[in-house]
Amino acid sequence: MSEVRKGSCLCGGIKYTVTGEIRDVTACHCTQCRKQTGHYFAASAGRNEQFEIVDEDGLLKWYRASDFAARGFCSNCGSVLFWKRENDDYMSFLVGSLDGPTNLKLSRHIFTEDKGDYYEIEDSAPQFKQY
Image (cartoon, rainbow, N blue to C red):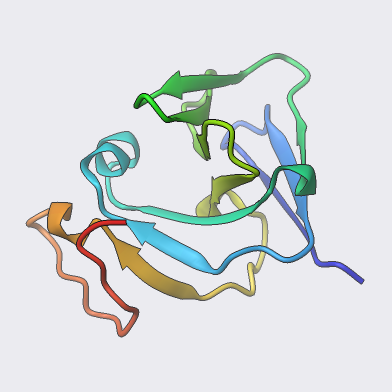
């Protein structure tokens, strides 16, 4: 049976389910991710068809952060939930928005040359200066 993971924003106005196999966690240290979240962005990803998003009040908003991707967030509580590359078959989601245990592992750090000067990356996951 496929694994089902559920998540939501802080206020609960946006809920989502992702079903099936997903990628292990990537920590992105780029400037945009740090500015949006206040630290680095820890995300997994699944195919678009694996997601069911429930947003009865129309709270999910998309901020076009670059010419190739948008960031999905709750317009009520401000929770950052998704990152989506234009015309891609996959969508990333912040693993901190998942409910309960994730059974995921940190697999890599990307954009490490942009990381904040107030912390060090001290785990054994591979590090990449760019994507």
